[in-house]
Length: 134
Length: 270
Image (tube, rainbow over all chains, first blue to last red; front, side, top):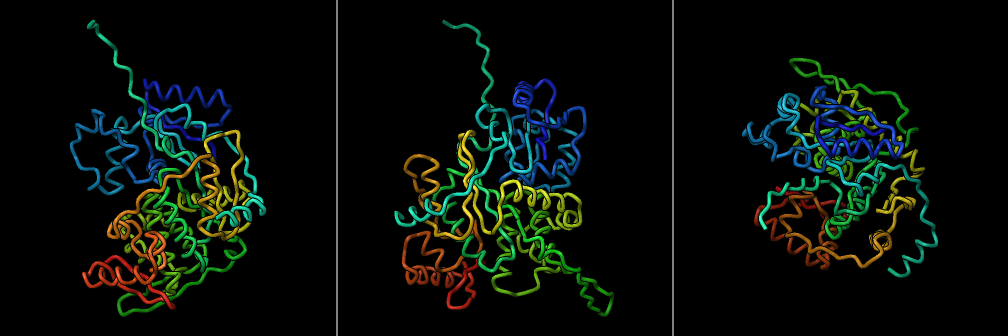
């Protein structure tokens, strides 16, 4: 699965992240949630990659969130989605997600996680050495 | 000199900034030895949570999934209930639970493994999987919808893709990625002792690990819900006898329940 990036209009971090993805030849799909409504499967995909559900992705400083004046921990997922789809600006931006991880905001070190990497087997002798040391 | 300053935008919050290691643990949720593996993972989390993010990847042997679906019909007085049972269903259920967040998925996985360990019910059947969702405190309505959704089965397929992509051929396997993107990920296949994983972590971080203080027993049970005597002893570096004594006290205080399991005990938050 390629990277999906959820962006918002006039968001500098979104622009930086898009620029970075292009420069590093990483295939991605952009979804601008301020003009193209977030779908329920997309919202759930994001949720599934968060540690704690909503804390990481909701911008508690945003005007949209403050105006709502509600305790999101009391809401069901469906109720929360209904609010988020109509008030996309209460989400942090950008949100990058692939099948392995989620990243919120732009940080030039962390975004490098999206560069594909190879895996090598840890050699048995290395393991034996560790067992002896341990 | 007071001049008007444009405030620089605060750095965007990120989720992994302070955690340099990405850890993938490949498991078969129905494997009988998964409880021992969980004990190792929990100890790593308790001691070194600040260093790594954890992602469970379900990699059930495909051949074992290739069996016919069973329908278990049970008649009750008012209506006929049809319960479906298949070995792929537990994996789909974990992915459905995960759609409510990683922690929800983890709670579900642990509850499922507890059922497997205690061999209480057929965990391949829809009715048991739903019961586990209730016990894991999930949003039940959402879970039921997701359990039958395309998203949950896609999420499971995606796990199988990661298994292939990282050349994982046996469960359990651990794959570690450090911060340095030029380095390859390190794959550790098979079961090893806690110390081996600890050493690898140290090697990858290239420095001495700082072990966190374990939380209080209450906190520990809030986090993991069910623990064995051996696990508690290992986390607090005390003998099993001492752990058993302390846990008995908690039982008398009505805080935990004891479940006898083989020669040992499991303790469950009340």
